[in-house]
Image (cartoon, rainbow, N blue to C red):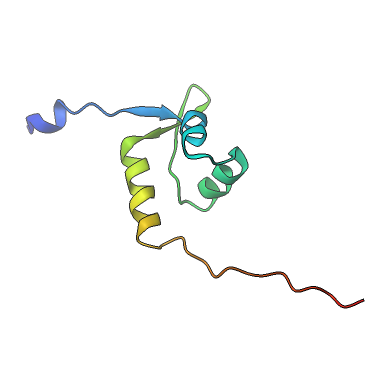
Length: 78
């Protein structure tokens, strides 16, 4: 048995609290979850994030995995 794994405490934070901290709307978080970019845990009907999920999301974002080409709207001529 590995003692390091048994003594590990997994911290969780509510999704809404984390969204407030980073300045993102619940709608954006819903899209991120739907795309599989953000992994949440359902505890008693509420969504929470583990520190591991936050770190994974941050690392993927920094690596440019979620980057897309900015689409500038084209004005339609009347």
